[in-house]
Length: 184
Ligand SMILES: [Zn+2]
Image 1: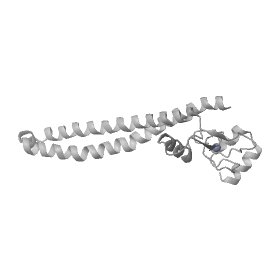
Image 2: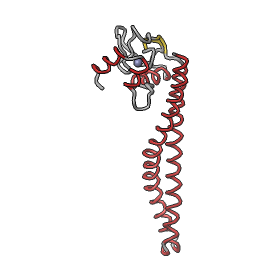
Image 3: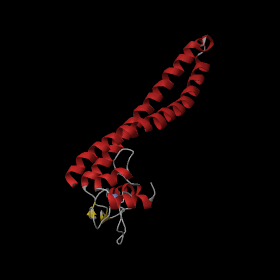
Image 4: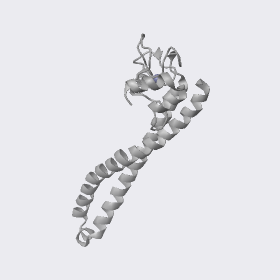
């Protein structure tokens, strides 16, 4: 949907409806890139916590902006802007990152384990290596060196990342549903 269409939707439908039009994927407007950047900067002490934020999705917005660029919330007729992002929202982001990291690390460790066991299987499976300690050690070291990097990278960086993101996002959507009740 382009900006014009969402603006039209905004004019004719209820607030909930408009918002669903903009976020049909999982129905949760958290976290726009700008909101996430803001929260990270605040947590590092690089940016003040206060400012002007969309009252619905908490995306930072300019002093004269009337419609949120992320969720198309109209600040004049729908949710007014707020001066600070609720700490609960920061908490939700932290939880999302924690779940993601858990999956990325878990899968990366699995990759390390596979490289360790796979390397052992190779060394023990080749009769020559089984009988010659030094070549076996060299081959095992090489398998570990390359295998750990590749397997941990693929399992953690790809599978862990994807599965972790989906799990974490599900939790974020759930928290958002609860939060929506409190912010109305
Ligand atoms: Zn918004």
